[in-house]
Every structure is written in structure tokens, then in C-alpha cells.
Amino acid sequence: MSDAQKAESLLQRGLKLSHLRLMAQLGETGHLGLSAGRLGITQPAASRLLAEVEQITQATMHSRTGRGIALTELGQVLARRAQRVMMEMGDAAREMAEVAGGGAGVVRIGAVTAPALDMVLPALRTARLSQPKVRAEVSVAASDILCGQLLDGRLDFALGRIPKEMETADLSIVFLGTEPIELVVRRGHRLAGRAGVPAAELMEFDWVMPAEGSPLAAAVQERLAVLSLGPPRQHLATSSFLLTLALVQQTNAIAPVARAVARQFANAPDAPYTVVDCPLGIDVAPFGMITRTGADLTPAAQMLVDLMLSQHRALRSAAP
Image (cartoon, rainbow, N blue to C red; front, side):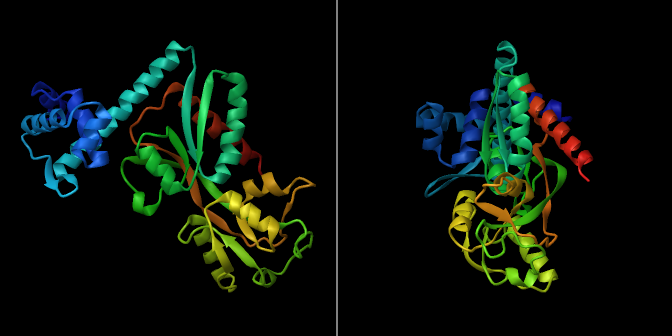
């Protein structure tokens, strides 16, 4: 029996959108009452829907636990597919609204810091003139958070990396390149403005690092080990970019940041930060354009993706 015939069989046996909505919520909450509340129905009504699902599928979808319910393996399969259906329905509504609104639409973008500055901002500046009815919501966060938001349907696409523990057939990535890293200090730092700073001298200062296990922290530690410099002296680890900049400005700490970030915050003559002239050859693992596998982007989202990729290719071809 083909996949289409299997789907048709479930529909013929009475599977409805209300059943899928409940299963999608159960997959997220693991609680019948909470799922019922989110759907605006009573808990007995939710129990009847769940019983109907089990009758239609002829399979046990759940088991009772002290804190609610636990979906069986088959229940998890249906819940995951139901969540995909609900995402597609939401995207369909948005796309219809875009078409009815003459190209208007909201695009939900996720990005780690460097691509947010290097790719998202330039694309939004261009789109603001060519597609004034398109509005963007941008989430800047670590890749694991972005991938979670993407799987939950809260983002259309993301620029980042898929962490190994989150590798799944539900996410696809088109790799775009690595992130070169620069070292940033405050303008009055002892290393500021000097040519050819010895690498060993960097180890005399504290470093502000991202959390242990992050791609940037891993890249820095691996490169320093290759150069026989050992781990950096570190008193603070933070994923907050603002806290990193504040600490660099107020202390003698060194912060490894993506080159795109360094260009934005350290290139201006009056900027409070500057790049240390000590290229260590640190590159973070490749990032890319991440989407939900098999999902069709709305026209507005596809337009921004195409624009970002086009601008990115142009910058790479122009680079020396």
C-alpha cells in the first residue's frame, strides 16, 4: 500500500483535523488537560477525541502516568506528523494572506550573530525598498535554540548550525561557509594598535568565552591547542553578546568574535573596541541555511532566502 493510500485509509476511517490538532498538542505538552485548554475544549471532549484516534488507528496511542500521559511510540509518530500538518496549515494561511495582501507578509528569521549582521541585515535593507509590505521578525540566538524554534514552527528558516544532538531528518541545511574569528579588546588596551602581537602574550589576559561546548568555544580551544598555547585564562563564560562587549569595554579581557561582528563594532575610528593584530587562523565550523525538510516556504520567506543567498554569493566572489 502506498503512502497516499495509507493516508486515504486513515481519512476514510474517520481521522479528522480535530484529532490531529489534539495529537499535535499532546506531543508538545504530554498532558490531556493542558492540551484541551490550548484547544479551547473540555478535558472529557479531549478524552473522547483521543479514544476516537485509537479506534481509528487501531493502536494504543498513550499510557497514563503520574503527571499526565505518555505517548506510545506509535503515538509519538502520529503526534510528530500531526505537528507537521498543523505547521503546514499555518503556513498555508500565511501564504494565502500574502497573496490576498498583494505581496504583504511576515517572515520569521533565526540567525546566529555573525550571519545576522552579514546576511540578514543587508537583505532586509534591500527588501525594505523592493518589498515594502514584507515585515520580518528576527531571532538572534544560539543554534540549538534556533533549531528548536524551527522544529516548533516558530521560524521559517534559520542561519546557523545543526547541533549533533539535534541532527534529524526533519531539518535540512545548505552549507554556506565558515566564520573567521577575530580577537577584540577595548580601545585603550595594551595590545590595541600594536602590529604583530605575539600569540603567547594573549595568554596573559582573561578571555570572555561563550559557553563550554559551543562551536566558537570549541574552535578557539582546538586552535590554541594546535598552537601549543593551552586553554585561555577565563573567568566568565556567557552566550550574551551585550555582556561580552560590556566586559571587554570595562576590563582588559579579550573576546573572540566573528569577523562580521568585529567589522561592525571595531572598525569605526571612534569605536570603543579594536581588533588585535594577531591572526590565529581560528574558523568556526561551517554554518548554513536551515529549513524544515519538505516544507515549502511562503513567497515572502522564499524571496528573502533567495536575496540572502544571492548577496552572499556576490560577497564571496568579490572577496580576495
